[in-house]
Amino acid sequence: MTKIQQKPSLTFTLSWPIDYFMKKMLSDLQKIAFLLFSVFVFSCENPGEIGFDLDGTQNGASIYTDTLSLDISTVLADSTVNGKSNYLMFGNVTDPIFGNIKATTYFQPTMVGYTDVNGAVAYDTLKVNANPIADSLRLRLVNFGLIYGDTLAKNFFSIHRLKSPMDYNKRYNAEDKLEYESTEIAKFGVTLKSFKNDSAFNSYYIDLPKSIAQEILNAAPSINGDNSKFVSAFPGFAIVSEGSNKSVYTILTGPYSASTSTLIADWHYEGDTTKYFYQFDLNGPRHTSFEFDRSGTALAALSKSNNEINSNKTGNLSYIQGGSGISTKINFDNISKLGTNIKVSKAILEFNTLPNSLDGLYPKVFNYVLAETGTNNQQLRSSGNIPTYLTPIGNDLSGVSFTLDTTQTVNLDITNFLQKLTNKKVTSTSIILMPAALLSTGNGILANDNLRRMVFTKPKLKIYYSKY
Image 1: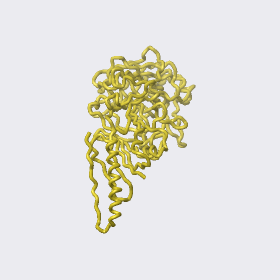
Image 2 (image 1 turned 90 degrees about the horizontal axis):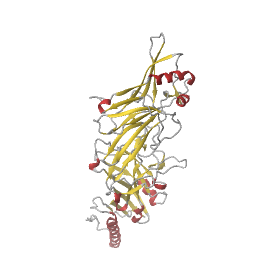
Image 3 (image 1 turned 180 degrees about the vertical axis):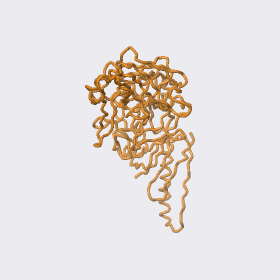
Image 4 (image 1 turned 135 degrees about the vertical axis):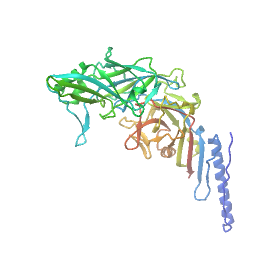
């Protein structure tokens, strides 16, 4: 371990009194001794970014330190809520780092919603005259390229009816499995080319039985445009993967638009040449159920009962994966070695990607959020049991988002957290780094609706502080 001492440059004027000069020199030497001790304790590489403040105005210091001052681990969340999210996934894939993954999609079509003049959510009225005759029912799937695994191999899926409607008010998570009818109502096979031509992504259409369209049309008069009645009366669907598949596909859901997946019913009336249709959106109850098998990987021992693996057992690597609840925990217990009476001016935590973990078949995480760690290595929650995130002023229901840069590095400003920690104004001494979904405000929240993943090497911590 090599350490380089950087000598400060001191400038004096002859008009200074000798006793003042001597006192200042002794004071400066004490500061240098303290700084060199700090570097010895905290740095395991050349401290090329150390700077000394010796202008006599304050006892200032800058420290560049690696993770000897930190304790890094990979942790697993107790639940991963992904209900009513932007993406649904289905398929099988074997990730060389994260193991085998199986994804099953469940969704409940609803009538199209919109915001009325009072800002409340309202729904279109599905108006159907007497004796409608169903012509077709089609499921439109929209994918914008978020695919995991082999995109060339053809993957096969079956569609089933759910045995009962989904609960509109439930917060479904990745562990929730729903019962569906054993008999499939449709089957389809896709590759990346099914969704994309040379210049753009296309919608992929699947024909469903006309009898289901007729079921919807016959129920429409009694439902009378009441979306809650429609959801309660009409069981949704499951998209189930065959075991031989090599990919997980993602479809975009949400309020109906030209770029979201939808269910389309077509019909006509006896003696009427006009064709009628209605496009239901997939913005109601929906979620992806995941099954993870990490056998044979560095994370094989990770489970709900053993939800933390220290990086000293994974070659100083830490892991993040959307949808699985896997995130990176950073513990700051050793920050006390900086001493007492510390005022943190700036603190940056730098995470670098393990180069050989990057693989185009497994999309990486671009955006991140931080949260304090609560009990049992879980994300800190509010008094109302809602997950909270770190912001420049504390905790909120969304947090500051950090973006992976072109060097595959993410720099995290943790100044506020360390200021509070050194002033004993937080109860937790650790934070977790998680994949983020960006909000319109620019802030982020945890993204559990995808399988983006990342492997990080041992991070570096840069702290600028002063003693008082």
